[in-house]
Amino acid sequence: MQLELNVTPIEKWLTKCKKPIIISGPCSAETEKQLISTAKNLAETGKVNLFRAGIWKPRTRPNSFEGIGERGLEWLQTVKEETGLLVTTEVANSKHVDLCLKYGIDVLWIGARTSANPFSVQDIADALRGTDIPVLVKNPVNPDLQLWIGALERINAAGITKIAAVHRGFSSYEKTPFKNNPMWEIPIELKTICPALPVICDPSHIAGNSELIPMISQKAMDLDMSGLMIESHIQPKAALSDSRQQVTPAQLNKIIDELIIREANISNKKFKGQLEQLRNVIDDLDEEIIQNLSLRMDIAERIGEYKKANKVTILQITRWEDVINKRLNMGLAMGLSEEFIKSLLQLIHKESIKRQTLVMNIPIEKAAVAETGGAI
Image (cartoon, rainbow, N blue to C red; front, side, top):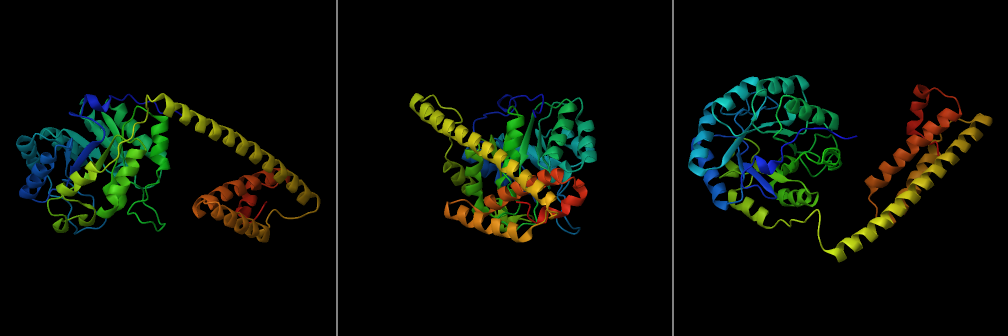
């Protein structure tokens, strides 16, 4: 699958653009003094391309700080005048868009809660039609790549070519060290199907904790993302929203200074030759893995035929538990992670069930219950 978007390269619309692009500023605009003081300190680092601040804050429950509203846009105008920084804020509906255009906001972003709602995204897209203001689209709250793609397509279809995606992690019931599970495979797939689309990482919302921001930022750079959106506040502990995930401008400066920026391509012939050799080895191993999986499924079908002839059910719980334990112990001993081994075995198991289901002429909906048992 390839995603066809009309994308203007980011270096053509974001001034002083070099990797990594840095977008920074407080989670929320709280007071004019807080906003301008933070902006001036960030501008002094010489590393920030775009100053961000939330004006309207979609909160989970009422009676939380839901943003300062329209007067915050006046403060952002002052930030532009006094620091020279371009400014950006979040919009969630057409009214927000109209106000931002009125106050000369340079870049808009669509938040995770909004990008999850096609009606809201279309409302914003309709309000943007006829403008050329850049728009950043954060991934939806849930890990749904198609929903993220749909939001990007709606904005692009409105004539906005100055677009970028923002990876801020995904809501998950799984316990992880992160506020939002990064699920790096999703932004990687987005980059793969649309190489022209800039993808920016939001370590603040992934982490939920300022101590994890440097590690996440480095990971994003190692995955060749275009930049970082990191929340910064002049006094993080006093912030009215998301205080734990914000850093001071000085801390931001240190994080950026310590990043190791690697090149996606390199002209060193010796390096390229050695890299190509290693990739050839991986290609050979992948072919061998696929061939072995094909053989394995052929055997699974033969087992299905044998079960059918002897009137034995697909479901073999004891066998499945035995396979899991043996393969898990072997994989752990070889340095593979438990999560990877279990995920791989579940995929193989599911395909085995499908093959045996077809052999035994069992309707798929009835066989689905067997997916918690063993067909191996």
